[in-house]
Every structure is written in structure tokens, then in C-alpha cells.
Image 1 (tube, helix red, strand yellow):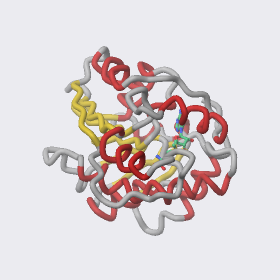
Image 2: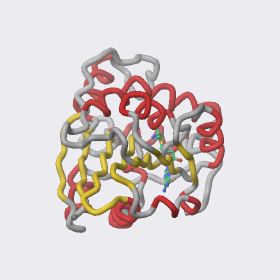
Image 3: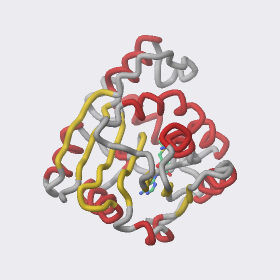
Length: 224
Ligand SMILES: C[S@@+](CC[C@H](N)C(=O)[O-])C[C@H]1O[C@@H](n2cnc3c(N)ncnc32)[C@H](O)[C@@H]1O
């Protein structure tokens, strides 16, 4: 995949997006099953952008080491500048081979819907995970979101990658076809939501519904 500068056409909005998502990552972390112990393990964040999710996960769950992967070189630079002394590397996929077969838990937040080929994506994540490793992917960008087709027009306008129209079943089917075990739940964010994006959320209820109900968290478990 050819590298890009930032996913958002306006560079400053890339870090803004990472800071905006921060309020919801806590709910994503809460959805991690109690049987999945993160402490002391190796983790991967796919489509890490400016890297905030791994910084939060490390501060809350003290993983041993982590890698954030993205195709956006400027976002990775920003992520590196913010890492402080945490054991995290932020890399382009082509530079991350040393993590292949070493990862216990992979994550992605609002990235899986950008994949052009879900079977290829399952293989890519699978190449990093150990046998029995788990991939948590969260997204509300799917046709089950009643606003998806309006959002698609906005996202296409403000970002640089093409979009498809996935139903939640498409994510499930792609991983099941590869022999992964799949579970799904809602993000179920029951805290305050930010009300800054009137274009995405014309009504306050839209934002409340999106973060409680539309964002789904998929748990994909690779075969042992
Ligand atoms: C909507 S942003 C989400 C960023 C971050 N996960 C967050 O929570 O703020 C999507 C990210 O996925 C990255 N991305 C898209 N396609 C990718 C690919 N094929 N490989 C790696 N990263 C990708 C983009 O560059 C962008 O940083």
C-alpha cells in the first residue's frame, strides 16, 4: 500500500481527530473481555494515526511492548513525538516485520471500514498475531448506522482514501471464512459525548446513539 502524508486532507485535522477519539477509547478498552489479559503482552494498533490509543492502553493496562502501524507518514511522525518513555514503536507496515507472529492482541479503532479487501486484512492482521491471538476492531462506519450514506459523502470529501459500504455481517463473514472465531457487541459508550461535529451529528441524539449503539466492537480470535 502506497504511503500517504495524512489521512485527513487538512493535516491539522489529523491530530484533532486523534484527540477527539480519546474520549471514546476508554469505552473501547472497557469492552476487552476479562479473559484477555493485556498486561505484560505485545500489542498492535492498526491504523494508529497519531498514536493516542496505544498511549492510553499502555497507561491503563501496562502492556510489555506495542507497535502502531499506519500508512500516513506525517501521523506516524506526530505519534513518535508524543510517545515519551512508553515501549511503543510507530511504523509503516513495511518496517514492522519484526513483530510478525509476535503479537498477542491487535486493535483498530475506526479503521476496518477503510479496508478495500477484508480477506486480505484478516490475513495481514493474522500474520502479526500468535496462534490464538485476538483482534478487537471497533467501527460505526457501516450500513447499520442510519446516517452512513450521509457520512460517506462527508468522509470522501475530507479524507484521501476510497470508501466501501460494509454491513457488520461483511466484517464477520470475512474473518469467519478464514476460520477465526467471531464475537460482537456494541461500544456502549454511556458517558458524555462531545457535540462539536454538527455535520456528522445534526442532533444531539445522533451523537448519543452513535457512540452507544452504532459503533460495534468485533472480537476476532485467530485459530490456535
Ligand atoms: C479514521 S482514522 C482513525 C485513526 C485512529 N485509529 C483513531 O482512533 O484516531 C483511520 C486511520 O487508518 C489509517 N489507514 C487507512 N488505511 C490503512 C492501511 N491500509 N494500513 C494502515 N493504516 C491505514 C489512516 O491513515 C488513518 O490514520
